[in-house]
Image (cartoon, rainbow, N blue to C red; front, side):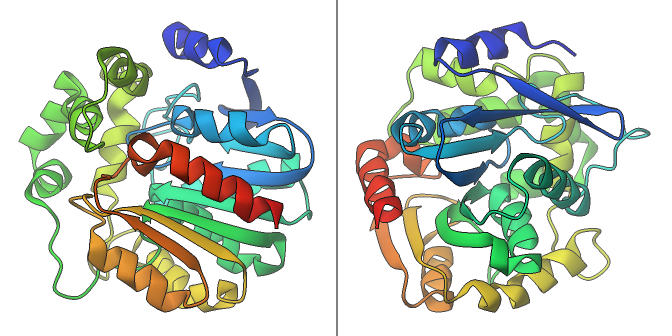
Length: 296
């Protein structure tokens, strides 16, 4: 399904949309610059737009590869009969993209939100293909003990009313554009984040991501998220940079502390005034730290 407004935004940044077909579905990705590859994996309800400034900062020295998950951004929006919207499907998509674009060459992996579960699930299966790790407000392990799913996510995950709000009213994408950054994003900035999600069909993946949140054994993503959490030890010797918005109402300071515990040698910065979209709230500092980290 064409997304002319979203594609225009990407092209206005000086990027070239690229596509590859897997199992009959078209997956969009950016492939900008030359040099050591940097793989950037977004979450929900964002898209490759999240990493636009990172790509512009790095493409002079690195090859930046940024996929849109199926159903997100400029990628196809299949129905549930054509595509199983689960964590395992996302990991398989990412593996196919990496195999197609960089093969066995090690990558620097940057992850945010659901990108942590997806990217790290791939990474723990192929630790030799990971050069470095940059972690931004995410999780790649089960919900921490004592934590509860926030009420808004619980409503969307478990109720027909929540599904209606997401698919018909675009509440999740619009709401995240308002509260995802601690500074108020401008009207055009908010519009860019929600541009791909301009009709109910385009919002299916947004809803399915929330419905796939693994909370207990028996949930479709549970086995994979447990195995990923256990497998993170395979990456503990990799250089790691953790940049965190401490005002995130889901991935709060406890999650930041957990990443620091699992990666004790990582360079870690928690931004007291930044929220979930840490690249929006602390972009200048984040870009400087990422450039420095990759330059060493």
